[in-house]
Image (cartoon, rainbow, N blue to C red):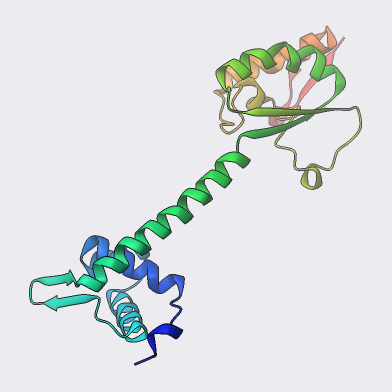
Length: 196
């Protein structure tokens, strides 16, 4: 066995142990982790050998945690929970900001009048607007929504771009009419052109 003070188990071993200890089943842990039952069993054996202590009592009716296993389970479960909370807070903070790029006309005539109602409906979402009449490289500038993506703007939800088709068509016609003051006809693939 390895000297216990030099052991630094991998995250995979600890995740396998935590799942097995939580379910008290190598089979259920394997299903959760999308590995085989024998892979979880090998992970537990590797961890036990590395720590120099038995973590599970294996019996005919299943497995049970030893006292050392219970202590390690409490520590690993709490640590993995903290990591998960940190990841959730990072991803939720990043998803609360939406960057919209559009032309000056679109911004002043369509977006700004609707911004207050959007902010009331989604108070946790910070909206950044980049209004310019120049072409922007969306991949490089980290833009979430453009004025060409009227479906997302019409439903006023930055993460749900599935506005119903009838509403989307109505909003597109109204938008084009507001912007150009002219009659609108629908072209293929969601494009709009105006006729004077």
